[in-house]
Amino acid sequence: MEEFFEASLFSKPFLSAVIVAAGSSSRMGGEDKIFLPISGVPVIARSLLAFENCGDISEIIVVTKESSAGKIREIAEEHGIRKLVKIVPGGNTRAESVRSGVLAVSENADFVAIHDGARPLVTPDDISRCAADAFRFGGAVLAVPVTDTIKYGRKNGFVEYTPAREKLFAAQTPQIFDLAIYKEAMERAFRELADFTDDSRIFENDARKVFLTPGKRYNIKITAPEDIVIAEALLKGRDSE
Image (cartoon, rainbow, N blue to C red; front, top):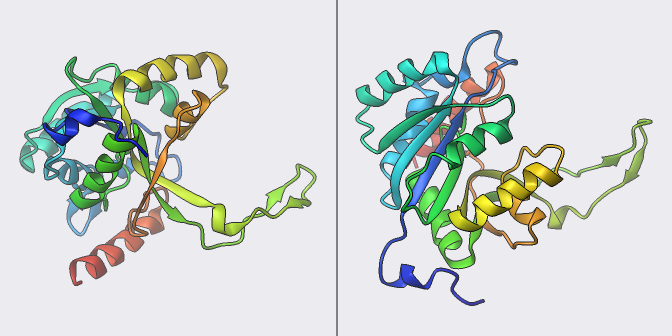
């Protein structure tokens, strides 16, 4: 397959990171999950640090609730996050929040990396590997093979069919795309799709190919209280390797 971004052979593309942290945390018992500590460090701080310490990232934009913006800025300053350039308000849906972040990136950006703020265990290496594939193919997502057997069910509760497991992958973030193409595809998706929770679907809806960059199973998303315990165990195991 031909190189997508030939200039990257000679100069590093400008890669903006949009970290989405505007969720309702409805399954966390009223606590905002991005501020919960994992081994003493807030979830959002760990996510920010991964992008801060990745050499491929040129700037960081955080999308969050207006009520959380001040606290996020304080956390960023406390942890030495220098690449954070903007904190923008989110929308009523994740798709609207992503759109708000993408429209806020620098004018000279070439690519955009979209990441869930609630995925605090991503590493700079994970981000760089995904970026390298995006620079080559135009779009890439971190993903891991599905290990469980998946059933496609009917609304009446019965199994309709069982898809081949070897072809199934669980998408993670970051998901990284050519910015100009993504912006055009994003506006089209808002007109044509009812809703989308996965950013690569925008590229797919535009008949664009998206490369699956091998992810790591420790890159979990914090959605429920028990995920904090799991994340701390994964972090301890990862750091001891």
